[in-house]
Amino acid sequence: MTLRTLLLGACSALAFAGMASAETLTIATVNNGDMIRMQKLTDDFKKKNPGIDLEWVTLEENVLRQKVTTDIATKGGQYDVLTIGTYEVPIWAKQGWLLPLDNLGKDYDVDDLLPAIRSGLTADGKLYAAPFYGESSMVMYRKDLFDAAGLKMPDAPTWDFIADAAKKITNKDKEIYGICLRGKAGWGENMAFLTAMSNSFGARWFDEQWKPQFDQPEWKDTLNFYVNLMKEAGPPGASSNGFNENLALFQTGKCGMWIDATVAASFVSNPKESTVADKVGFALAPDKGLGKRGNWLWAWNLAVPAGSQKVEAAEKFVAWATSKDYTNLVAEKEGWLNAPPGTRTSLYANADYQKAAPFAKMTLDSINAADPTKPTVKPVPYVGVQFVAIPEFQGIGTAVGQQFSAALAGQVSVDQALQSAQQLTTREMTKAGYIK
Image 1 (cartoon, rainbow, N blue to C red):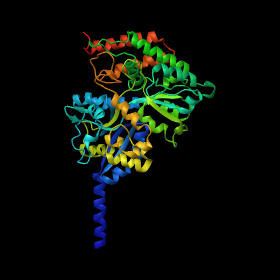
Image 2 (spheres, rainbow, N blue to C red):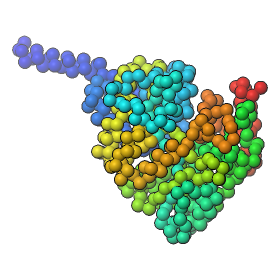
Image 3 (cartoon, rainbow, N blue to C red):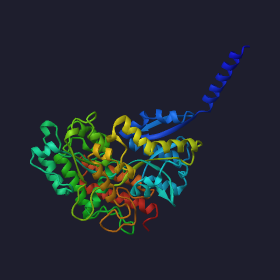
Image 4 (cartoon, helix red, strand yellow):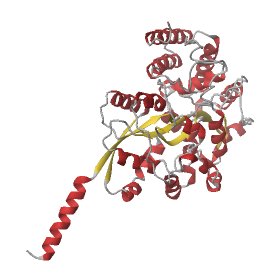
């Protein structure tokens, strides 16, 4: 046997051993634009970590929550990295379902994370998830339609102004609807919007004794206002529309206004994706003059479940995807406009980002204005702006969302929807021991 043959054989054996020892991380994520962009850029991660392969499970928001929650609660161990929201992190950390992120690397700069976002991901002084992007909510609107109607959007509009403007810019013959709002049932879909909206109307989920409040006038005012506005100025089939559906409507010129996640600002401003990119303006989420705006606070985060057998590799991926270097990579490949927003102080101090993203200051102001510890006008026993940070909220929030979606579709009246919401929430909270 020649030396060359021996060397070739040795190289093949080493290559095979390398292949055999490669770890595959299974990553569960949501099917929104920023996460899909991240998947396209993972060659950078693989180049830096040649021993790690990635397998993606990409799901619609409601389905992702259901599958990930079932897997982690049953210790199924299907996933090594989870995409989870601000709601789950403190609850799951307390249950021992998540691992603290202690090894993100010396260059990670955890102190650069925005305090409002970081605090929601921290339990007992430890970070249990790293924010991929953070958001509040705001008004995105068509400046051309406002100009044509002789309207000027204030920086801080009221709900009454929004309703009046929505009716004036609606032109159903041309398939232009004055306003698009979430109607698809789900605690993180229509109830994220409606809970934040209800805060500004003076409503709350529970009083200080955990008694549900859907039988109070503030909730009736909120739901009547929403349903009537959507009937007069919203698109057909609105009860099926969530974030992605409304984004598509806005990008194709069919919405005059859209009140939703600040993260959408880059998608509606991107000429490659939006037919109205050069016509979009931004304003703070509306209020009713009671001291609270209808904006929320959220982050999509990457976390490592306690059941993962590949913790070191998982932490490397989490660190890569949520680092300053990743932000710079997106800027280099896709432009600063598309950098994942709402997580790092340094991004908002970056002159290139400020220049590329006209919505940067409005996003930061919206995030800073939301206070999860004092989300409502009246006192409450819970934390969370567009959700209630208790384990039972997922089920209750989605069930209430189904009632409110049915009211929007005209299947039940507003009064019936509120009555059902009150009954089912009271039943579940009694069963869980919150109400004696």
